[in-house]
Figure: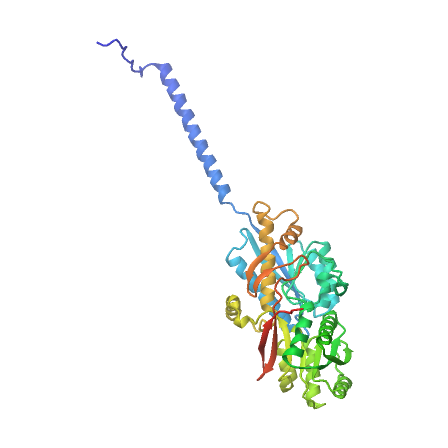
Length: 424
């Protein structure tokens, strides 16, 4: 035998031992059950996702002569929202759209801004088409920290303040952004092309009384004169003006080799038609992005042949980045084409989506208690590869993309001639 004591086996008939064993078994069972419950609760919490629905409002003319442009903007925003939801671009966030008709009128645009501010689910706004409408919307939206991104406004005052021409640039409304370049570039770009590219030395300038038209005509005229050209005459008209007979006679008498029009396509198409059918001159007409639309050619008819327009960006049909947008728009079978600003409207909506994404990322995966302010703050850092190319904003809220294209009407279609940027 060894010196070790034998291990005593438990006496299963010993009552105190059995009771202790049962208690330990019961405690273990309870502990196991508790752990299972806690594990299940943890799994439920992990699986429960944050969910919030927000709205991107659209302000555009859906009635009146500018409706084709406005509907192209609205349709394009809808496409962007569909894509954001389909790909769950912002986890936990579902986007909706609501469209508000401003009819191209500043007072209606302001009313739409107030309506958007009053709707708590509206997180941002795309629009408007007209710079003059935007001037009436900015203050209302900025007070509420509601982001406004325009796919079409080109008047520099909206971002640089009223004294930008004198060199004093002031950003008054931090909630305002745009995805297109401005007339600080477009007007001079058009003037350079007219003088150097077309060899035009004498121009007659007509502008409407809206901020866009006056601003574009002013920047064009300044650069055209700087190039060495002559402004043979100037005239202003009211938006919607129908009686242009006297102006066409004055234009013909001044013998220019180009007419530059600062304004929208309804009046410009009428001017071109009168010049060539009534006054019977062959003077070409040139305008900005607001005449770069199939509706201009439809209204002017054969008189539009040989007319010119400068427009923002690069033609979408030659941009590889725009193929998805072009095909998606076609598949959606909208009755109205996207027009000049459709691709920019898509990118404007996507910029807001990215602003929401940034606000959510900065707040542990949820929108903060003041989501509008958070989105506006996040917008300044937004950068992405968009339909129209790289999208980002400078410190004034202007697009960093300064590309422009000159078009000419050939065989009843706007045909691109040259793409580039204004070089001072």
